[in-house]
Image 1 (tube, one colour):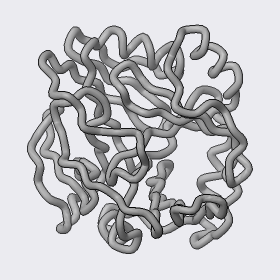
Image 2: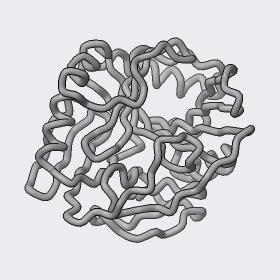
Image 3: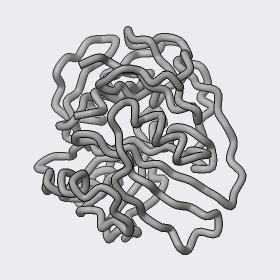
Image 4: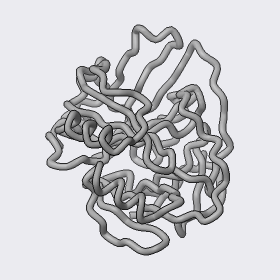
Length: 256
């Protein structure tokens, strides 16, 4: 395990616990009126109530640098999508067959966090670390949704690799997007049972976003390890000091 927790602000804790339990099969570890800790197999989701949230500046355009989505592996994508549709959950992308021979879909949690479901083992176009790929595939088909990755858009994949390399992540594999005119490529950094899905767009302009700690939705990723020297302090939340990487992905580090 490398990503220890995913930190999410919620405007209604009980609603969020119900949402993640019903649609993503998480198992509550601790639930209070002001938050929750939920087991997502390879990491926990930590929810915290924000009473007077700031308006979020996050947008779903992947050309905004920093956090993009939280991904889960599933074995029953169609069944879960049907339940989400029945409940009126908003989708960003209906199920498609994507590059890498997987089926994916994107939808939003009640506070605007973009979530992805992935069905099937990714068939990477480029393999840089065979052992890491074998470890990834070796997790097998999940019996319930399994937290898999956090996606981020960056300006320089090498700088990102160097930054997260200090937390134990290594370049595992890549997926090409040959039909995207923006020069879209995906690289995967891996440590333990979780990945960082790194987006680059070499032929498109990107915009930055100032990190927000009091807006609803995704706040940060909490890693096992020691904070890289290249991180910038941005404040504290969830009882931990938070930092940002060069592209604005907020994260914490807990020495294991």
